[in-house]
Image (cartoon, rainbow over the protein chains, first blue to last red):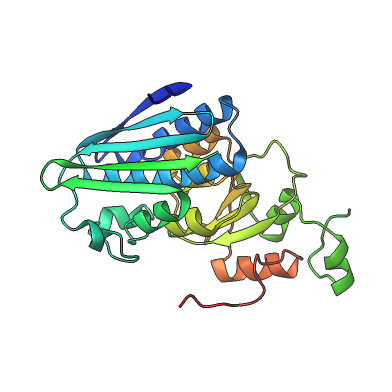
Length: 142
Length: 138
């Protein structure tokens, strides 16, 4: 049987609430600092988390981040309700983006989000049901 | 270690460090949200308006030069553990950005300089780029 996590945390994300974009990720950073996770790992988690959070803010109606802290790893999952991703493979292509002008005016939407996330995580699983939403599961070794 | 002045010899660059207060002076910047540690060492500089690039390539302890004056800039700087943010071209900094900077503890400045000039002056003041060689991804 799997060992339960040392702690579990959830952070809500509101779609289209641009002014809140990034707040959940800074909360994740605080929780990881308090849990005594190393700075290098925190950096990787937070970069991936921020990109994923902005994807929810820019594309979905709502979502949340789930964080499980294990002795040897961190599991971060981001779930959203929204349009989903029509073509997951295409969305992983650096530079490909379906973001609008508003996203670009915030410094995002250049099609580097998912490639950046993949770069930071030790394992990544992205699933989507078009018209319903997307889920992203990331594992970071400590 | 001594503070850098504007014009340095090669030897000066080797032995001096650039402090945040020094960078503010070099960039003729105005303080929007002050730093609690003006003597902190600036360990690098990253210049971009695209936050995904900052997240991917900037290194902790660097200052960010950007034309993007939004609270996302501050949250990006916080997530990447940057030392400070400088908004270029004398752009107006709104209340949201200032509020975010206070909340996240990210010092915020405005410089009247262009991004190009600001980068040039920081390099002249002895701040080295992360990479000196160029390798293109294949």
